[in-house]
Image 1 (cartoon, rainbow, N blue to C red):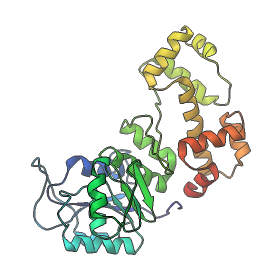
Image 2: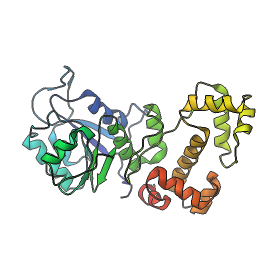
Image 3: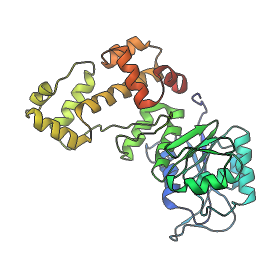
Image 4: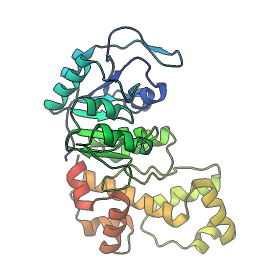
Length: 320
């Protein structure tokens, strides 16, 4: 699993009649140009069938391309499907199969995984879907290996995700494969993604952390800590800097960030370590020294616990 290098990747989001507005919006926001104000992906809405493409709520989309766009797309996303029992249109299934065969990323978000299953792409694959669909999915597609504990699962060039919000995690994961953690974190923060999303199993997901709070004193303190991340901080020291009691500081910091100070600091250090792994050839020992972890062993344990892989595996996957 390695980072992909293409000039501007193309993302084809396939939409069908009775689409879910939210599910279509997720890849549109993550891969669209408006979130960061620049074009990092060429995003296309692709009509999965002929006729009007209207949601059950009456919203209508006007796709910019037809199924021929899947012949050259780097990423093909199926954000939704209208029925567990209905076979998707044969031309759409053929186009999706062809995209998968030539090595494009093919992604099924939530019920979009049913489209991939109907296309025959999930046989023998480890997959994810919404936990409520476990019984139905297993009955219909017994050759797939379903993991209902995972937010998303990657198996080869096929990625499937669980319920509604897990589509965000899945799309951010793909974003990071192309552009690394820093930009993916920036997108997540713009979208106000919760600080922690435990991914379960062995995959690793983005853990965006609060960059600021509504308390100016805490904001200044957080910036100061980032500029001296290796310092050994104590709660008494920090409380004194913001002129609070230790108890008040602990309570206000958690209320402002949703994390204890120790959790926040560890997350900051791990995010910095991810960036260093992706952008330099520094040794693990040097990274530990630059990020403030107490030892190589402590760093490896925290990294593996949070990311699901070792630092070296992370570097191999996301080296820019």
